[in-house]
Image (cartoon, rainbow, N blue to C red; front, side, top):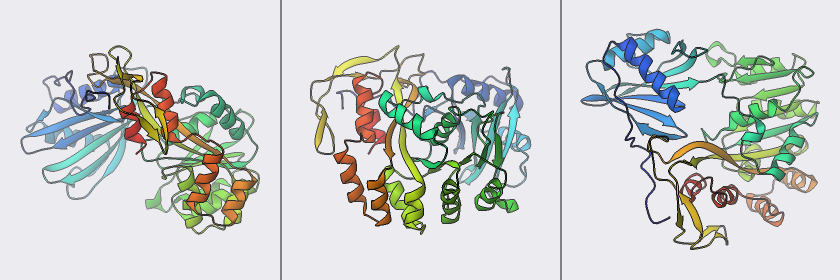
Length: 402
């Protein structure tokens, strides 16, 4: 888009070779290195002649130095032992959790999952950092939209949904909402699968479908715990959605997430779940659609003229020749050209006009016409504003808002 391709997110010129040693030493070093990168996941991927290692950093995978085939089985066995998996079982997927002491002030918690593949078992480690609570003001909301969301969250009752694809930061957004509340005066109960961020001032529950502790059963139990605020990790079916919506009608503030692309699709999906439209209309307060965009590394970015116009719908937002930032890659950003992420948001605050559309089971175009009439900024438009501010690149915004 800017005349030169962005850096390849799959290549890392600064990849470091693990030190020689046994499986315990090598695994500790890889995890420590991933934590120093700020990685969210570590991928151990078996190939014909080696074990490929990749870190997910700011949403993109960075290739690391591979492991020798000889040591790979020992690494996988070490992870299985720590995560209390069946070390002899290689034919079916398994999952588990464990902690490692990598020299920091607290132990690092990891979630492990295996997947049988052609060349052996792939293992992905998710790094669960308890200190990753993000303050509301650091999410990336524009000032006026942030003020609206803050007011909605602090209402005594309602139903607020954060929506977006996997990895778009929905759970972090909900936890930032909880930080706006005085948890010494309100009873906050969560139901998640799994609990990814530990917060001492609230009660956190973890669903266990294998044991029969489903979201539906758990949510019914939560309602008997005298809650003021309920956080449901995800609306997965009509039963859970129905109970959550009813809870908001009976005086509770309910937060949850849904895997939909934008606010309009969220409304349509709720109706398609078979829930009575009047229940949805009377309970829903707001939908926050979001994506995460990588921020251009401030140490190696450069300015270039935009080669073509960039549109949002039928309107040009950035014209040809506009000076925009372009990532290059340096040692500080591990060659990616980006460092850190910020959110872009589309916020729909419900009023009587929108509630009437829900009751009439309106189609998606009817909702989109209202958003356009009210000039509610789309995800792409919000992202392009961050391009104008020099925070991210056009390529990055287009990547997450296709």
